[in-house]
Amino acid sequence: MFVMGVDPGLTRCGFAVLRPGPGRTVTPVAMGVIRTGPSMQAAYRLAELQSEIKELLGEFGPTIVAVERVFLQNNARTGIRVAQAAGVVITEAAALGCHVREYSPNEVKSAVAGDGRADKEMVQTMVQQLLGLSVRPTPADVADAAAVALCHLAFDPTGALLGQREQADHAITGVLS
Image (cartoon, rainbow, N blue to C red; front, side):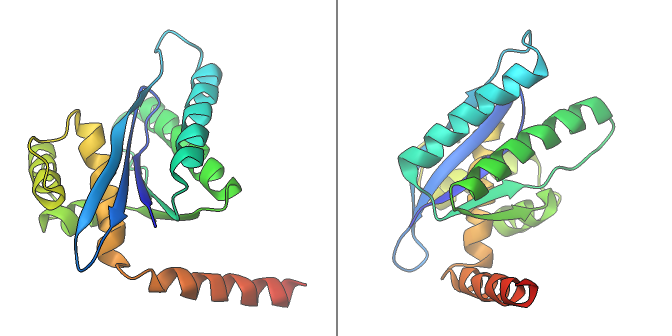
């Protein structure tokens, strides 16, 4: 089973594919950033992101795709672009049959660093420690993506919640039929 964490963004979209092991061990399988050119129109950047995400999903076949929930601060334009990128990731993952979970930035920071207000450096350091990396993952988008995947594993280490969700989905489908 693989868990893919995604820190959505249109300019930089971080991803991390992790493999849970025995006990609480987790092995990083792939980590990186998908970049799109800021000089391109947004529609073409989103199409490029979609293509890259689809390729990653096809290559690794994650069971779960955990995505950081969009948090709007001061810049609505940036927030909209991040939300569009998140939508592309969520849609591609669902279309390929992956379970999709979203986590707030505070949930991610709390799960990984023990503090929902942890700064970027603390998240990078904790991801480095939790994954046994020799250096802190950079850029921060990569560490954030790994933190999202680790957050999911903290909330559902055995995958039990996935089974509950499937049962609920089946019950809803049965009622609607």
